[in-house]
Image (cartoon, rainbow, N blue to C red; front, side, top):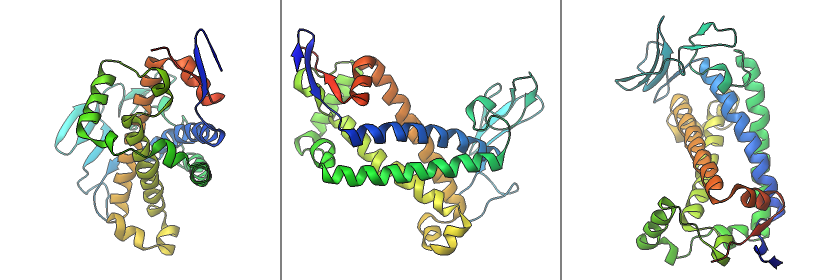
Length: 268
């Protein structure tokens, strides 16, 4: 299908589109409810144990007049954003993350856990269905598997330079994933998301009893919590870069392809 504006090609199959939007919803709610859960104890540790008197490698807090982000021995002022911010009524609050970044917006550890566990189930169930569908329709092998030539340092460096200069592919190449997309999607699908799921299970006492090897795998519940937090912010970084690239590449065309499957190729 083509016209003067460019050829339309079918870029994204239905399982990919369904998983994309289910993932977008579940990760959005998981991140925000996770920040509320973090507010209950805004400190991270390595090892099996961690409490207020133990040394944390990361802490977010506030004093009477300022907010602080503490990473190791480095203290970073964060007033107005972290540890010291105003709520809707203009009152100063000293919880780690502000109300507009959390679900629920008011402090509720129980409520945040309900949101978190519900949408964790959607993430796991949707991811499992997507993997099964992608094995049957060969999405992984056809679209995400890097070719040997693409993995050469020269090719990767050229792709990095093209992205930095906002030189996006045109013609038939625009309908295919480039090597940076492939590598980032592989890291997210087979790295960050599974790590988040496994470390999340490790923090659950019931799962520890059923699968005690998880504690050994991650070096204890506190290490699992730290890895979970780092993976969550790694995923947030991926989402931010992804959204920027969608805007720069042409949001209407990109969104249409992820809603209908059809993508219009740009002329060379």
